[in-house]
Length: 544
View 1 (cartoon, rainbow, N blue to C red):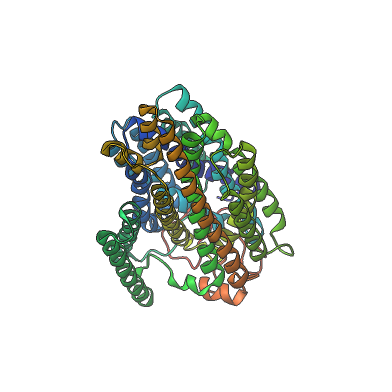
View 2: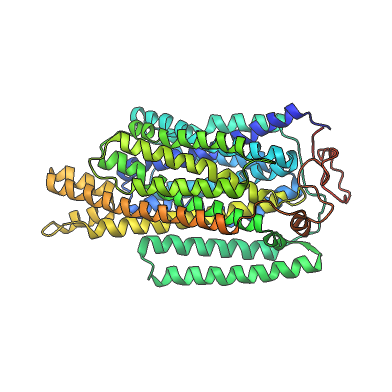
């Protein structure tokens, strides 16, 4: 079946709804962390595991999910993943303990592991290079829109109902996404169907899980912890063996390799992936700390905390809109936009590092908005550089690789930056003469510390906890700013102004289109919805 230009953009809307549900979950989880700490008696370690359990499963399943979409059909796998995500949301809502919530987050991770890469995988299939900039902005914007929607709606629910209601808001969005994807999105899959690389799946899943677990464990127990170091080193060794195995599989051509190592011959793919990973590293650190600052230090309720995040989102949306207009043939390159965006983020985060206990809402709103503006420039530019090197034939596995590295970066960000925050927080506490139980509660995190101080009606202890947390948060923001500055310098030094045709040909093969038109841009590629199992030279996908 052929697909009109208008319907392609409607299909993009269905993809946007699909990633919106993942963004909603992420936002409401960060917003609900202080409430979960109180109602489930969760320690800082438990709070990290609410994020980490999800991250571990995503790390293990991302690459196989991309391969599954390429082989079985990206539409089919995306619908199944949305259903799993909806079931996981219900399980989270009715979890009665910290352990039960961690288990439900595992189910959510299974769904998200397929939703995220497959939503990106369809973009090189449906859209030309010129159109892809806007398409990426739409998908990225859907995640960003979830940031104001999640905090405001989630904050209202937290104030009016029990905390499980913030997870139930995912369910109607999942239902809408399933209907939209089923009706609007064309089916597409790879035409090549060699044997599945089961050994590669096992090695990649084990290696990524081990590295992610080691980083998380180090964030909880310290970077000198033996188990954490062993997990990280073991995971890296397994990933090295995985890369060696994939090289052999690709050379023989008997099985379908899980990742295409030739992608890393493209500077656009390599540095686009690295830069989008680094921005995830910084962004997730902010999202982990700021809701706790607004609620525990400033005394805002959940809804008030959500409203205070709006300037960040507003800046993101402005940056996305301007960036999509500026980037394109004959306009600003991804190199220019990524460098400028990261530099703006670095400056904003440096200003944010001067936050104090008594800083006004206007101060936070100002640097939030500027940081969001920089993010709106940088993220789509980096992603477009990476996705532009993907052929339609392997867009599922290629997008899964990009998403896997970004997810690992986010996990490392939460663990490393969380460790920085907690270490500085604990070093600034003054607990001499306090009972052991109070000392343990205060040292476990700002939420339990605030609760202990209020229970004792101790104003000095309350002040100590708040000041210590803000010190830790400021140091963390300096670290985030340093990451953004390093990203700007790397983009300036290594991100190509434009990927050459020779480079793209060496990655995708000379006859593979990177969009719905051939290499000369002279004609449409037929739809892939009627795939009949025969080997074709190229994957065909739907559009006129």
